[in-house]
Amino acid sequence: MSENFTVEIISPDKSILKSEATEVTIPSYEGQMGILKDHIPLITFLRPGLIIIKENSVEKKFFIEDGTVEFSNNNLLILTTTAKNLDNLDKNSIDIIIKNSEEKINKDEISDKERYLLSYKIDILKDISR
Amino acid sequence: MPSLDDLKKRIKSVKSTQKITKAMKMVAAAKLRKAQESAEKGRPYSQKMQNIILNLTKTISDPQNAPKLLVGTGKDKVNLCVVLTADRGLCGGFNSNICKLAKVNFKKILNEGKELKIITVGTKGLDQIRREYGKYVIKKFSFKNKKQISFNEAEIIGKEIIDLFKKDQFDKCILFFNNFKNVITQIPQAQQIIPAENNSSTKEEKDPIFYEFEPEEDEILEDLLPKNISTQVFKAFLENAASEQGSRMTAMDNATRNAGDLVDKLTINYNRSRQASITKELIEIISGAESL
Image (cartoon, rainbow over all chains, first blue to last red):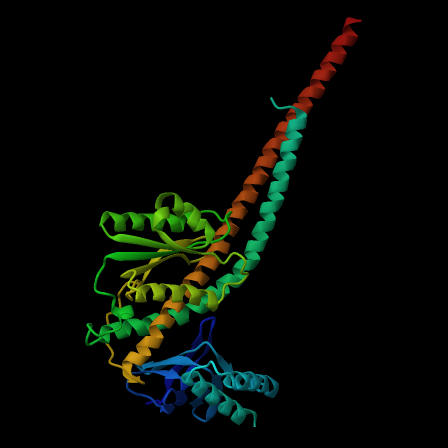
């Protein structure tokens, strides 16, 4: 029996990815979460981070800022407005996002929640660009 | 019988109208492709979002404490109708079809003795609704000067709807828009967004799935529900944009063809009367020469 399940990443303007996967790691709101086949139905939020989709030994990585995840009947659904394939993201554009986020985080008017999300975003992006 | 000069003027004016309609058709065709693409690509997102919400509605264990946005207020007194139309005319039955459907619903709501509130998006719908139902319109939006409607605009509407709901201004919210089926067919649709309801035929009546939530169910619902409303509005926007262009394209295609027919007919008329006047002149000359 195959250990695969389907994973879909959908944004409002297009379907970004639909494929099989053996394991998917998502940055859920309360921590990294690995999903294998026959996981119980789940709904959760994402914070900025990396989605890592493993199909056998092939790995695909996406950077996302937010989103909603639903898992049911061996179908993982990721709804997000901001998913970028890491292969298409060059160092320069990452640096720009980091700079923008750092500017934002230093402003006073943002809420704690936003600050928390932004700091995550910066850490992740710095990790990537390294 | 109109004079030759009049006919000539008519032909010229019809021809220039034809040029305009032809150009409009071309523009609509070009815009249509883009709009259609984004409408079709946007469908999965809104559909999946709606599915999640519907699954959630089925699993709600305690309807009393569930978020009102999901299950409604339990009443059915005040109905809010959001009518999405275009800002521009000359697109066949596009705007009237939505308004027709909306008006049927308005009538039904009023006949049942319920309260009616209307939000219009787009100026054309407002113009058609204002005459009969003007006093029910509480808010009007228009994005006339926006070239491309993005998620932001949908969010503005979504926020407005949610604000009104939180202030207990209505119990039920229905969206009216045109569903884009293909270039020739657009189906006006009424979609209820608050409380969430399955509009598409309920063929898959599956067992409810019990989800694990992380973080808490309440927190998720609080974030997801407003998002879903904006998403549904956005979907309606996209469908509408594609429908508008499709409708305009067919309408302008017809207009161009009709203008062509008219030009042909007028040209025949023109040639006939020209020939008639030549013949008349010849007869006059000949009879004049004969009488000498």
